[in-house]
Image (tube, rainbow, N blue to C red; front, side):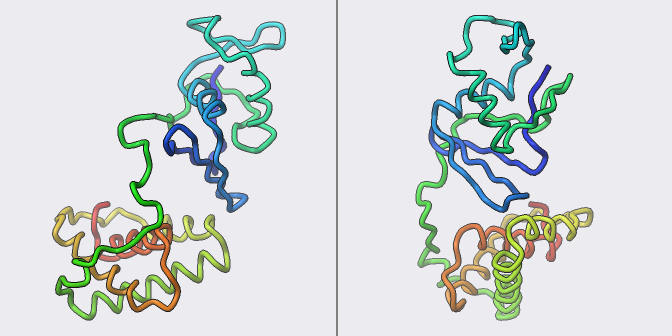
Amino acid sequence: MYFHPHKYVYLTYFNCEIIVLNLRKDQYVILSEDIAEVICLVLNNQFNQEQGRYILVDNKNCLPQDFDEVIEYLQDNDILSNKTHDYPAIRLLKKGRSSAGAPNIDWRMLNNDLDDKVPSKFIIEAYFLLIKVYLLFKIFGFYRLIKAIKRQGRDNCINRNSKDFQLLATALNKACFYFPVRVKCLEWSAALTFYGIKKKMEM
């Protein structure tokens, strides 16, 4: 059997911990390193159940002592599905070189971004996209924001020019400078995604 996270749950490493984004609850939680290790085991291995306890198919002796209790905790908190599957999860959890998270989680734009020349039209478009993202997020929550991005579709996104993409990012940075509310990285990235799709950028 294999364990899967719920379809509306997304997991990513941050340092040695795991951030859980639950779109249905419109919330995120940070799991400790011990629980993160269990989740990594759960999503990357096959299990059997003997006498009410889980065991690894390939190795019966390398599970943490409180493994079953952590599984129950993750299921009770709506992170792991209570249903087991006979195939691995599509979205595997990987801990790699890029899993340390942003070097500065208190996001700031670079000063030289404001010096680059960008058409005023682009800045205005970016500004209105910031308004759209801000209202969607504040009124309806993150789940509705994600659904709005998915509805935009990406079938016609064929432009892969990195210079064009940088132009959009710079226009968005300039729009942030004039935005009356401090733009956080989540809102910035959502606005850039909307903008890239609008300009048919492959992101």
